[in-house]
Image (spheres, rainbow, N blue to C red):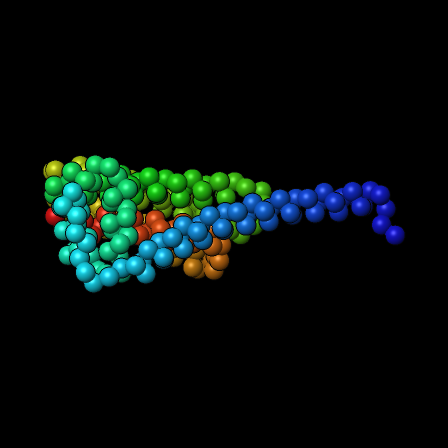
Length: 206
């Protein structure tokens, strides 16, 4: 027979476990929905160019400089900024892409930081999360350098964009080595890489 004291202990453990499962499930659902939205939009991609005279530079870049696979993501992301309607060159587009990429990278880093300090996170995962936090810090640093180098040394702007993505790959490598299977992390990181890839594509086109 289970004593009253032991029963109380088991109940407390059960409550903690349920709370963790609910938290983890909600985070996975959020990330999965975001990735699903991108996947659904990707299926809508067609060979016919996207025509919109209000977004001349955006339309030209996304139609002719981006593969079909990434075309709709390019349009969707850049159009999420109101100023993209009046962007008349790739430099303007790059600044928009940098701002959006920085915003996304900060959100992803904040999420990983929260996980790293969560008592429910498995101890072996914490060093990996800290490596990713450092990688995202470096990514944000490289993104901040692009606009400066774009004025002083344009070729360096492309290098900065490339290095930003290299840092994201460092995080990804750490996740793979440790066989991290948490979709709430992987999905967010995948989206961050897509933003970084867009920045590099625009920087390479200037």
